[in-house]
Length: 233
Ligand code: ADP
Ligand code: ADP
Image (cartoon, rainbow, N blue to C red; front, side, top):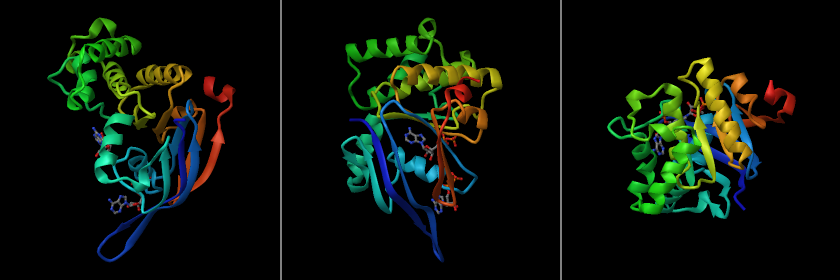
């Protein structure tokens, strides 16, 4: 039902004197509950793919299905709606609002959508508890460690019950202990059935995913399942 399907996805950027073929026909599926790490050298098309998956940009051709929604055929308005209602973003830089508390930061997407009622407020408290911040609801980001801030961002990414959590180098700013904490959080969420797609250049981060998809020169060059042994090492 919530599977994501990518078929022969192409993206070209037209510059003044040349056309850059950033994605040259990429196909793969992400079933509900999967945990995919996307890797590849700089310039291989990772950000471009992430922008398509995040509904920030439309493909030049090919198909991107999020459940029943075909991204490639959407109007920009509909695309923006899917982006804000159905995708959970987690960034390297957390992107929290410094003036707001933990629970208020988690509420932000709902606030902007004008759907922050009592039920939703309660749900945000539950999400804070889910990421281990039940006793920090009224703290501000400056009072939290990097790992705690990233957990706020993860809770915020879940408020809309997204198709998937889309994480762009989520541990890029974190030391190894805190990275382990965030990866444990992703394991927990994935074990509860949530779908995770993350972009990373760190092998030890990618190995914790269920699967590694590698891009090279705008093409998928490998798609490999991680063994349980690799994942728990
Ligand atoms: P990665 O994230 O793997 O480094 P990108 O998706 O950023 O790869 O880039 C893939 C290719 O597309 C590169 O050649 C890059 O220069 C080009 N590219 C990316 N974004 C744009 C853009 N907005 N305009 C023109 N070219 C772009
Ligand atoms: P990184 O630290 O990994 O570079 P950024 O925080 O700069 O990640 O954001 C990565 C991409 O996501 C950028 O292209 C940015 O435009 C986009 N982005 C940032 N905030 C949002 C948002 N709230 N919703 C959708 N896209 C966003």
